[in-house]
Image 1 (cartoon, rainbow, N blue to C red):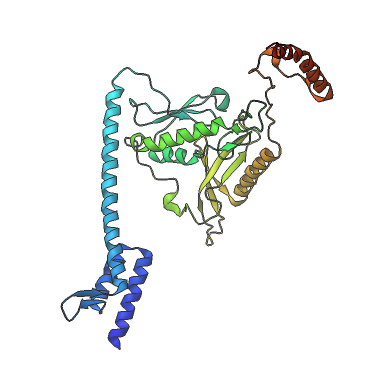
Image 2 (spheres, helix red, strand yellow):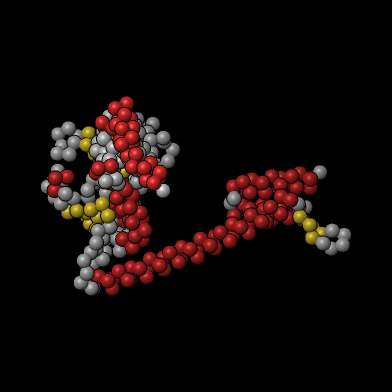
Length: 355
């Protein structure tokens, strides 16, 4: 009976390790199962194992292969990034023009100069800068990752107006066209959102190169109990309003939160990264107001979308003399068509009789 209980306990440990897919727990459970009677040999010397042990051995091999594959992939990625970094270094010695990485929907243009590998430069239109400066830079990997997190990579196609998500949306223009005639419906593409999505993809691809020579910097407040999950507001976008500022509105995203401290009676805080790279910590009431402001902005866009003017219809496929005019429609138009047909018909009939 004791051996039977040990066998059942080993089977339970196997099933628990299988559900967790924990390599260490699985190895320990397999060893315990083999020692408690889940494996052995038949009378004729053939090995046998229980179904639970077979499944555990199979998953153990799969986890081992996956671990080796991840190691190879990480080594290859690091080697590839190092090779590309060396290539950029060689390119920096050539007198070539540096092209921007891309532009976000607020018009800020991002540059990575291989001759200055310690910074990610941003060019801001003067009219968009309350401080009056037009150039700024990020010089730590954490700052670059925060900028990457704040960018909207969806590149959504919407029904006009400002696109949803971070950044100042630009109203798109466009009209669908029907077959051989006037366009039916209208679809607006947020060009700013598409450009921002391309910028985010470009930054994600070059992140190992950009951050290779930058100072390692921990994410703000990472060691003070801040969490990037566990609250429904994490990942939500917000709109901060500053009535007295030159730029009164700023879009951002809640990236982490600090739970309330019961000992000190301090309330929860929410870390917001703005689209321009700035960050701030909001109290509960401030975060709730910023969320409501963004929700109201989206409701306004849905209720009052910009009206896209349809192009004036003109049939250019037919010669001007054959184009249909409004006077050719209705009973009057049918009568004129019949009279024209009656006038056209006699000559062909006479030619037919002559033959």
